[in-house]
Image 1 (cartoon, rainbow, N blue to C red):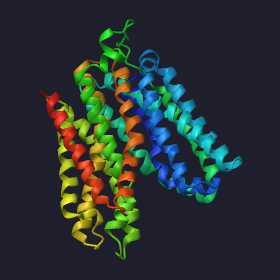
Image 2: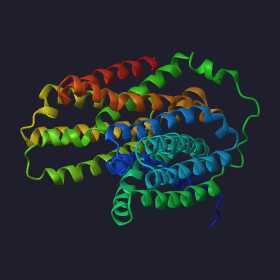
Image 3: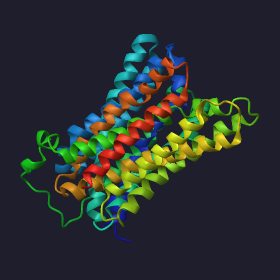
Image 4: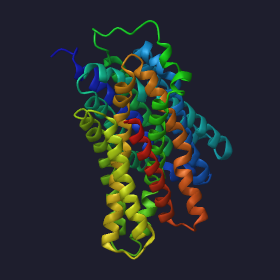
Length: 407
């Protein structure tokens, strides 16, 4: 079988890269162990994750032109930055304690690994869209679904390695595994032979011009709100479930099962929404569906006070689980549909650059999403319904923006 086909040159390497870097969402699996190992608070350690998301978005914003010019260089850089960041984190955990360890983790996990995340996230997308020219949504959905599936795949491995070998050794082992996977993706990935990158770049797609474009700014804002609201709720899944099912005898089972279910819908949303956009006249319709459904379930949650009822009502519990499923699916779908939406508005020539600029919204949302929830909960004595109300309003704003750019 020839290797020169769209599956071996685009889909497989994309999955190898994204299933590796997507493990950034496993942070909650080892956050407590990291804090205990270096003798620092969970809150201070938690900024390493925020930094990783920030550097992901910002490195993607600035790496677009590199990816356009040389996909092999970008895939190799992603591999080296991501895996060296993981191994560096392990070294900090093994040899440092206190503030020096915390700073080292910020640098290795937050900055170095975050740069690898951003470049790696961006690298396979244009190649997939070129190989799957008539199914751009399906193509990006396949790749970005891998980013979502990474959490479900890696979480049990991380728990096993932690219990068997220790937290520092877990980072060493995973760093080696992901180096092999990402380097294999680097060796396989190729653009179609018929595609030739333009030598000159259009002035229309310069950074200043794009952030002066009302269409691009609207897409950026929609994307930001979807991530901000998603992080505001997804990062508090466990606490919300604890609040809703307080006193229920099978609470431990619910806490262990529901996150896996929502993670699966996060991955399915990445594939389903983007693949569905291939059959629509305007891919922006997907965002209207995401924002309407998300605003609807959060509003129902506010009106029923489901998130802070604490009565153990199965009906309210089912409503919260449905809410988390809808939010996770829309969160994932917003990521995977973005490249195809940008291509439909601005063309394919500089899609990596435009996608990278749009991903700067992810960097900002990584700093604001969960921190908004933290602030609201502190001001309302732990009232999760207040968080739902804030996200309902923001989803409504995003819906209005989505409707306006369709005109």
